Length: 135
Length: 49
Image (cartoon, rainbow over all chains, first blue to last red; front, side, top):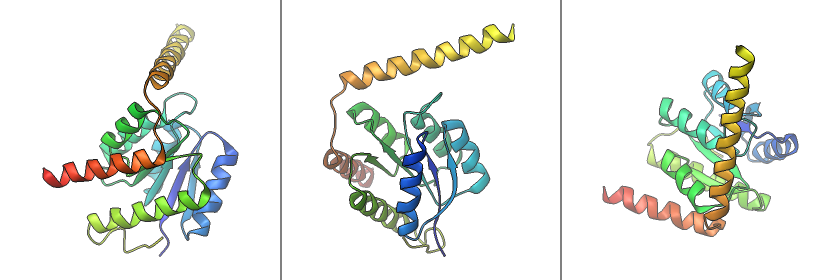
């Protein structure tokens, strides 16, 4: 069974790129959001296996949504994917429970590798994982 | 008035974004390798707990 993912980024070309990337990894993208609020609503509606979440978006920031999602669903698998590269923001997101933090200037192959490694480790740590879904 | 409340909410969001931008400019930039190290340190700390 394919892992199900949602993508949250205000830039449509980034969402398209991530959708293609995830699809090539065997991940089904079940929804896209453009704001933190949309991401929270979409998460509750779809209950995806993974979330790719941007930080700088109109209105509230992605790390705000990260905090709310992890608060309500502590086992959520959320990877930040952003161009924000300051130490303080990275630390804050990791403390809030992000599974990983990927900088947008990472090549596609690197993004895929990080997602895959993080997903494998996440499932190993939580036992049987999300129904044994593999990336 | 509703319009005033909306404007105030919008202004507060903008102020928060400005503050975050200022903070991000003063905090050192990290690389993907730095983030990997930070995650490893976090895992080590969690194992110790």
